[in-house]
Image 1 (cartoon, rainbow, N blue to C red):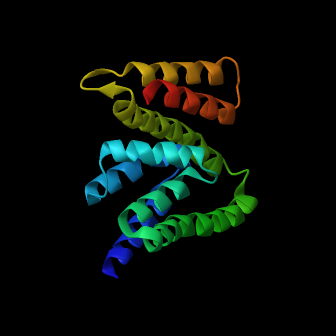
Image 2: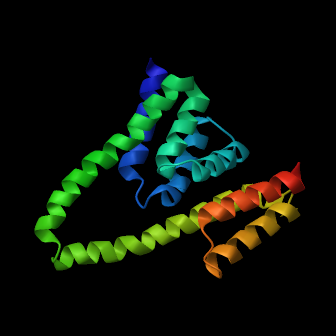
Length: 178
């Protein structure tokens, strides 16, 4: 039972302090999971891939994955509940607050400061994931690097749907990496 309490409080803290959505929360989730000894960096990169391609919020999917990895279905439920409760409560409180003070210079200033933080956290997640996915033994891993570059090009330049890119590159990975 105490292991489930630990799992719940771990994801409760992530839910409270993990701002910016799933990608921005990845560094915090990674640091927390690694500090607890739950999974390696390579296992975490699998978590990210699975969380990215399954429906729902990435942080909730990641919590469910870690919880399942740690404690089966019960662990998945506990971790998911832990990460979701703070968001639910915070959104209700912040919505009430913002409806009253949405034109306040202080509130506008807070959001002006938070937006770049989110970009920095997403960039940090890119580096953490990139190290485990794109590099093997100190040098670039060719096929994953090509898949990354093509995905980036298709999304940034040609505005291809992320769903189409994920399916296309999943097929490419199956053909070229298996």
